[in-house]
Length: 324
Ligand code: PEP
Ligand code: MG
Image (cartoon, helix red, strand yellow):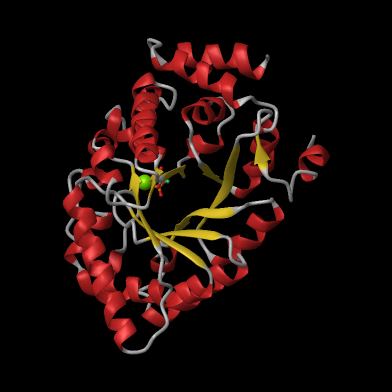
């Protein structure tokens, strides 16, 4: 099977009826890029920049960040690289920021909330990103966006930094796509409003599931409620994809669900454009997608949307698609 998959390394990802999607990888450090290329990744759909900030005693400098981003962009040789701005908080703490302990860190002062408040830190990262944009195909996305104002504020700061750099004569790519993570239910519901202003969405199901079912993604005792196939999740995903496509925008997914063999047929049917997963899942996913018909998956997906629960969806896909 592994040998069969290896043949697909340099292939595109196309269904039996000619519908093409992009298979991308999630990375945490520049060292991960090699694995992406070896496993046939067409892009990086999520570069988690937190790792640059973790396991050290102070914030990384602009220069350190610039080097990391530039390395990733150059190694990807013009393939798209979606970099997510700092998503600290929740389970990822930075002790040197010395932030007060919170009762509900996952609902607290984290990610874009923290960046919009600690603007020096945010601006340093944005400058490093903007400077790196000259070396490849950079797209930037903001994590944990809950309201349109947060996106507008973050975008305004980015544009300020861009203008300043350009005035100083620094080269910055002209058309950097700017997107958001959809991982908070309010944003999934309001996707049609966001779609007018963003260039793309990336659905973060790891958090979207936890927030939609109110089930902590780290808590074993409620893990039975952490249900990727719950029709509530599928309907939110459909809403996001339809909203984006109505406005000519593309949609990726960078949560674990994007590489899941039960979820993939549904996501394909719903029209997901980019699937971003761990590098080692890419060839398997490509092999699966190349056996599926988009038209068939559209009617399969439609049926799952009106099912009663996650179990029913899973059973249906398992017996009608995976064994079919
Ligand atoms: C997500 O929430 O789905 C996601 C990709 O981000 P993270 O797992 O880093 O929170
Ligand atoms: Mg997340």
